[in-house]
Image (cartoon, rainbow, N blue to C red; front, top):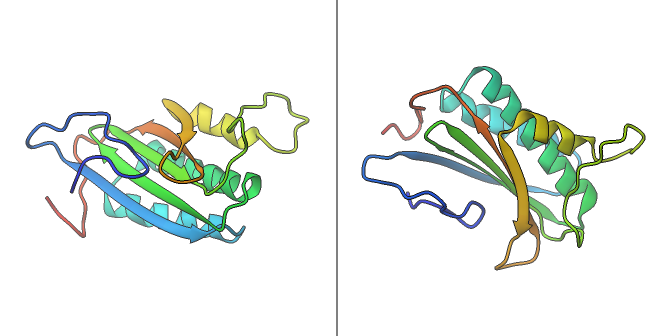
Length: 158
């Protein structure tokens, strides 16, 4: 498995013996896909034996980022990637077309939209966004710490 991908660039050198788990899925940019994204995320995190607060935070973050991609862009599909390296789970969601300024936090309770990123901000160690670069669209990512020394991939045990 090569470190880095189209969604999550390689920003950490992998020394020999370092394991990274990665899972990617694509869904149509329709409201019913949010539930599908949650279901796929839960299943993968269960297979990786990731439990507790990190598991629940990751499912909620995926839900919010996929929702934002569907609601705020003119995408036909969204791509989600989960990557676990060390004690960090990195979540990335790519859309096909983005707002010129990218996602923004809105701290007022009167806004109809924007509170999802407040949740992402509260549940993650860090988050951000950048242009996809090689294609149209934007990638929004978040990192969630987890306490597992080593995760296990039931489908592809190391």
